[in-house]
Length: 159
Figure 1 (cartoon, rainbow, N blue to C red):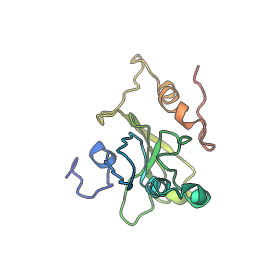
Figure 2: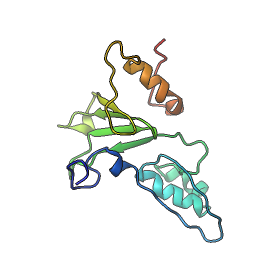
Figure 3: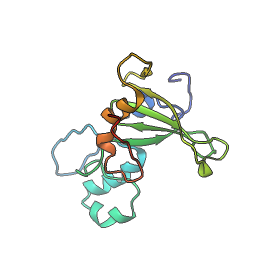
Figure 4: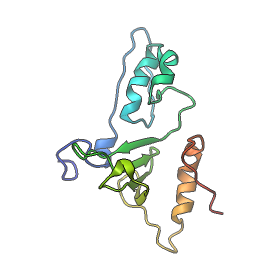
C-alpha cells in the first residue's frame, strides 16, 4: 500500500521507482553502479554482462546500463491496467518531470501536458514567481545536459 496504491507500477513515488537490481557474473569481481534505468534497459544490460550486447544492439529498444554513451535518464510509464499508457515521468536520478498525454486516445495524442516536477523526496517543486527557478530554467539546468543526444527532445536555453 505504498502511497495508497496496491498495484506495483501504479504511481511514480520512489518506493516503486528505486528498485535495486543485482547481477552476478561468474568470474568477475564485485562492482557497484548507480544508474537510472527503466525496465526496458534490463535485458540489454544482461546481454552486455554476457558480452553479447554489441551484436544485438540494433534490434534492442533499451540501452545497457553499462553503455558509456547512455544518458542518465529514464522514461517511465504509469501502469493503468489494460489501457494504453498516458502518464509518463522523465527521471534523471534526482528529479522527476511528469507529463500526460490525452487519456482518451494516448496513441493518437498530439498534446503533452506538463503535470509537475518532483524532487528525490517526492515533494513537488514549486515554480511560483519570486521563488527562483522558473520551469524553463529548471528543465534546462537539470534535464538538458542528459537530453542533448535524444533527437526528438529539444530544450532551448531560456536566457
